[in-house]
Image (cartoon, rainbow, N blue to C red):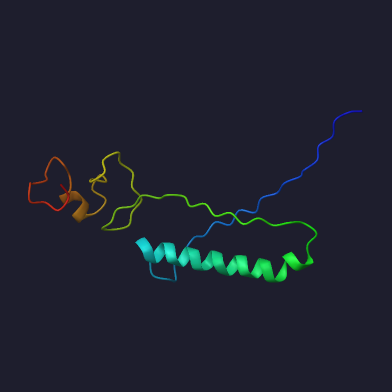
Length: 106
């Protein structure tokens, strides 16, 4: 008998991206907003989908780490842990070539 293809496992991937009409969230506030959104989606699925579905659901959460400048929130593009190529004036102060010993970046 020839082999046939049978899909036995499916994944639903939900990516959260904050919309522009809301202020840019950073740090723990950003993480909390994401957790709140995921909790709401999970609750809706449990309430409206699972009771009417012949399949089992497993919820698994994974986070993607995103590095950003702590001053201007621009994506981190450099290998340095303290200098992001001068993405903003405060980051430029952290340039290792210009930093002084009393700099907050060193």
